[in-house]
Amino acid sequence: MKKQSPLSNYFKLLNIQILLVSLLLLTSCSKDENPTLPNPDTSMYFPVNSGTEWETTSVSELGWNKNAIQPLKDFLVQKNTKSFMILVNGRIVMEEYFNGHTASTEWEWNSAGKTLVAATTGIAQQESLLNLNNKASDYLGTEWSNMPLEKENLITVRHLLTMTSGIDDSKQYVIKSNLTYVADAGTRWAYGNVFQKLIDIVSEASNKDFETYFNEKLKYKIGMDGYWNFGTIFTIYYSTTRSMARFGILALNKGKWNNERIINETFSNESITSSQIINPSYGYLWWLNGKTKFMIPGEQTVYSGFLVPNAPADMYAAMGAKDQRIYVIPSKKMVIVRMGNASDPNNPNFAVSGFDNALWEKINAVVN
Image (cartoon, rainbow, N blue to C red; front, side, top):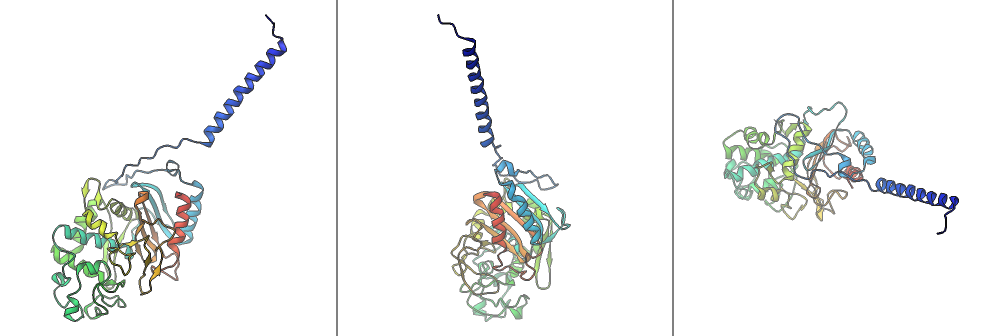
């Protein structure tokens, strides 16, 4: 038998050591390049109706881009934001407050609160207190407007929900003398304050003060805080940011809160479906993305394309003056809330200002 030389044995040992080190390095690199991400809880979460307990999900768990978060925050500050939340499956991913705003500060929803009126109207229908297809005058009495009676009789509850009443939209003070005829109901889309008549309809149909009915049937059911300010011209809801998020979660779940059905699913689906062909980007006081064209308040211009091109096509939104927003994105199980002052003080009303599109560019950098 041939005897191995000491030098030969040395090189064999050296080769084995090199092989072991190489294997360790490869294993280490493999782990670094393909980290195992924790699995986020994908079940739907509903925060308890009292207290501050609210489950969270981290950016890391979702595999989002951490490096894009600070640019998003910088943009929010630059655009006069007071609060901002992102929720996935009902859990908080981001919750930010700026410029002295806190989790307990109440702020105006402006026209984003129209969606609360729509939801309350839907609840009244499911309780058989009213019917969307009935004439508005069935609840308001005849001659509630300053229109010829035959034209007033064309207006249904649904027309008020869809901004197609045909009433003059140039006067925001909702008094009889201002409610004049422009077009037959259902033939013209125009964004105006006459939606406030839905508040009167719900009150008459339920035989209760609107806020009392709203509190009983919606607010308390999902743990919201806040109050209505029935001003001379504008009717505005005020609440904390988390209450806005709660309503967003209810919308995401098509009117269901935990195991309780708050709003009929049929009505919820109708609310976020094109309510007419004139402005397909509008449902029942909700704005809809992903349609072929849209119109905006104060104009009769029809614009082609998506309402917010950078946002997911299935997004629908509650939108109010000074850029109060609830974005609901079913495909991502996501709700996003923004409250604050106008992003552009020179353009405080909802319009094609570019704010939504610019914000979604920043959001996409984080979540995509």
